[in-house]
Image (cartoon, rainbow, N blue to C red; front, side, top):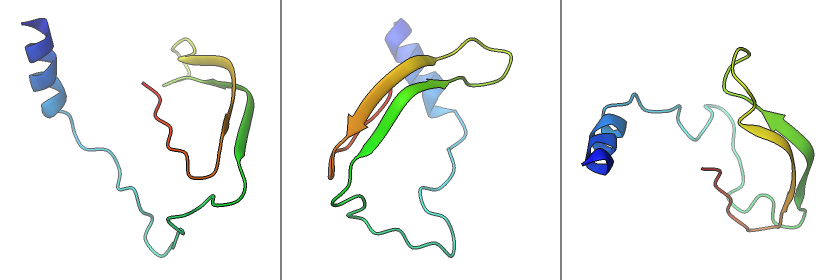
Length: 69
């Protein structure tokens, strides 16, 4: 039942920002030749919270899709 409750909870959340930025054109194939490299990346949801990602390094190859869960 907890899983079902979470689904209903998430369904009521406000939508995130649009994936596009007005007046900006981004090539759907970007990056098509170059990779993105992240070294020692740390991120948190707010300044008062602990790091959600801490000292993470990774490479995103051209055409590769990545999701952080």
